[in-house]
Length: 363
Ligand code: ADP
Ligand code: MG
View 1 (cartoon, rainbow, N blue to C red):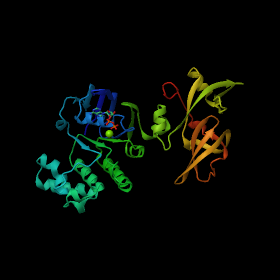
View 2: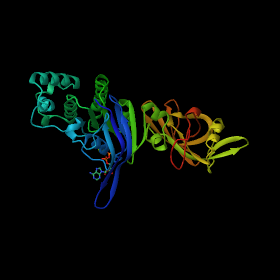
View 3: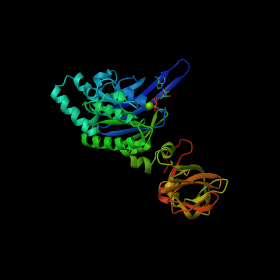
View 4: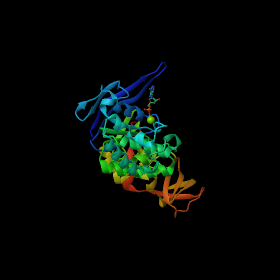
């Protein structure tokens, strides 16, 4: 296994009409043996980043390293990367066994070794029963298990998986997600796992890079992304629903400090006055508070419930508080119906403040 390092990598596609900056000055290190998640909305540059690592695309600028060696100009074959794509790629008319055995045959491994390894990997993926069938007859869930087996049977320098669970049905998706995690923990392989699904990324990966518009916005543990988003995009993108982001003025009155809006939203933040003063006390900020940390029942703010969504053991309340809207994620014991006027508060130690211009975290 290797450490993968992207050093200021940019990829620009020049079409006839427009120029697309698919990857914009990305610097990223995936330490040897790490399960890394690359997470971001559709079109943000994830696949292009993977293809650059695999050698299927050449960066416009920047360098790619495997360990200390620069591989930017290496052929894909020489890089020894195993890739699994969103849609399974198999030979439909040879058996599952032969499909999985292909990479080993290409490497001219002895037949006895091939038999042993295929058996092992088939057991691991739970596909022993279908080894003699042909993929053409199988459903997409089985086909993707075979694609994964085919990648895992090799001993590549790095595994890259591009939304491998997206086409599966929900049950198979959870089953394979658990399986992949176990496999990675057992093998300690360098894996780069791309998805637009935060649950997949946050449950599987040790470290997750959140990408938007070609840039890596934050590269951190799942806990840190949730607790301390570096900017408003990460706050909003991570979490279900994402962080409430409320632009407010910062006003001082009678020795107290408030977040305030023209419409009458007013929240005392004197408890962080000292920290804000150290930042030359901005005039406006974006208040970030996760819906889980909006408390309903009592508090200084009035809010009208406009919609209540039941999600399992929780309710998501859509609220209008003066001239601002926000969401609260509460236990189902909180009985609120559309039209009700409620009182709300925020869990103080969970309040985040962001710069309205850059979106970057202030505190
Ligand atoms: P993601 O995998 O995150 O959905 P991609 O890496 O596939 O994003 O694409 C990033 C951007 O680059 C998109 O705007 C996409 O349309 C563009 N793009 C990707 N591949 C090409 C290509 N071969 N030619 C031109 N534009 C491309
Ligand atoms: Mg993609």
